[in-house]
View 1: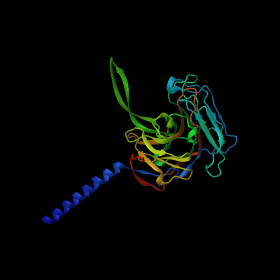
View 2: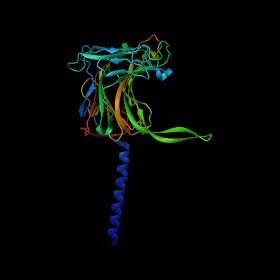
View 3: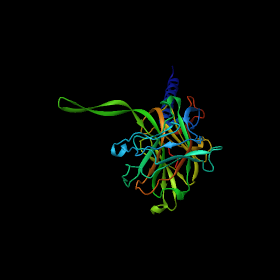
View 4: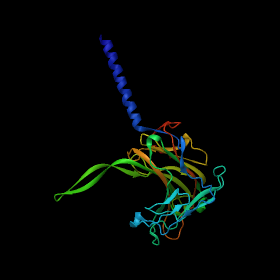
Length: 337
């Protein structure tokens, strides 16, 4: 083999190595996402609120385990068994079926209203932001991320003058997912304390919040809102798109086998498209393994006097698609401002 041939082989090897390194770097920065609502709707894992007999029975006083370590059974539940009070934070004070606001899904006549006055300990206003949770009970067991689960919902944003006049989070829509993580367990042996790490399955709650920015706080020229996304690759919340238009919005979240979560939103009630992608992330470097359900958060200032913003939702649903259509490559944790 002559010198020129050897030089050619070495150049080819360097080129192949450079391509491999570049490809690996690109893979680390990107994830595969798909549009929420792709695949098939999971049977029983949706609610359209069209049944005129739909109702929710509150069981007061509600739970406030997150504050005072107290759960208060029995828990509230809907007549169709799909919605339940959160044992951790309790359910919103008002949960009822209402006529679908104008501009909703074609043919829809019913939607669900959620609103709260006392979001903290029953009978003891805290004067600081607290939240109630309403849990969806229709997932019928955990769904592996290899099945590419996703979820969608339509949310009605009322006119600005109906929002609680407070700058801060007011609404949340979050998934409950499982991932393996390390936890440190303290042990005692022969008068010596030590700890060891062990691998456990834990729950995490990625999601999308809506924060109101009130013009009355002196820092905003006009009332507006913004999406707050939980969370980025470091596990921190970050600011998503600004909301300047009230009325109906469509939100979506999808989960891919690589463990990433993907966030989507657009005004109106049409189906989501690739243009509606907000961000993707590994949620603090975790690799999600199973999706279990979703829930809504209703937040207010918990002063005992001011009601939360009235939130109306319609047609929440869970989907699976083992081979999801319309797959696209996106940059991981790259929020669209």
